Amino acid sequence: MTHAISVRDSKITDGPVIAFPAESWNSFVTVVREGSYGRR
Image 1 (cartoon, one colour):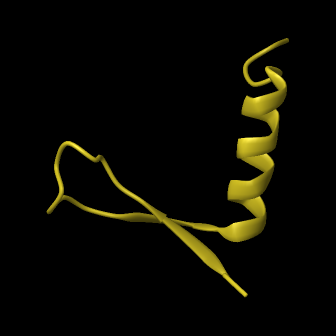
Image 2: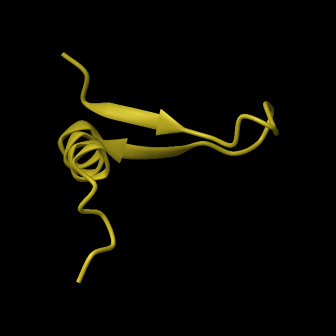
Image 3: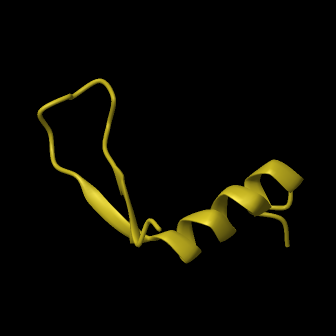
């Protein structure tokens, strides 16, 4: 089971990494896929 998702800028491969809790990342991806991210 994955507990964290590491994200970085793919253009800067040796740059810093930000780790998000897996549950938070999955929630973010879900709202982006649904097209509801940023809607008010």
